[in-house]
Amino acid sequence: MSVPNDKSPTSYKYVSNIFRCVYHQTSPNVKRERVLLPFIHYHINIDLLNIIQLDFTLTDSEENLPRSNDGKHYITWQFNFRDFIILRDCYAPDSINWLKKQGINFERNRFEGIDFAYFF
Image (cartoon, rainbow, N blue to C red):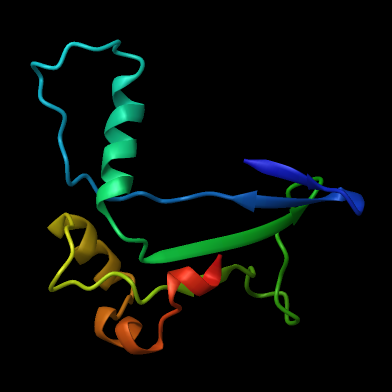
């Protein structure tokens, strides 16, 4: 989703989520509109799970990503939250394994992560 910045017509903010987890599966016996089922399923899963990470990337109107001073890296802001506790919360094992392979340290997040209530 792109949202124009009110201060500059050529500046855009992008907010996206990567929801790599399917914890709750809708029963095949549930009869609903086929179009609505993915959204219902998505909503149920979000309600069941705590946020682990949130990323922000900004672009200009031509979707050019910002780069580091040396021009070698794109810039994205990443926030890790402390609210997810792997020993307590619901999760899909394949999603947690993927996040661990990406470098997420859940134990470290418990102590150094952001408290979700203070973030928003």
